[in-house]
Length: 82
Image (cartoon, rainbow, N blue to C red; front, side):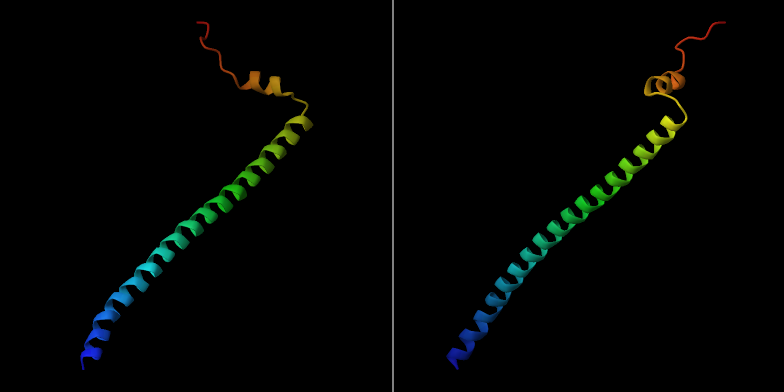
């Protein structure tokens, strides 16, 4: 009878340790998977942005404008004559 009582008292501690280890592993897994998802999302969007910039440069070169001409065309004068 005494052995049964001792084993009953040990199980909650053992279960608590297992659950806490499991909880820590779940937290670590969640953090790592979130980091990996963020990195994949970042790489995907950066490659899409690079493709859009390259396409924009191709269109600009096809229209015959240089980088300086496009910058000066988009500048606004600081003061307008009255």
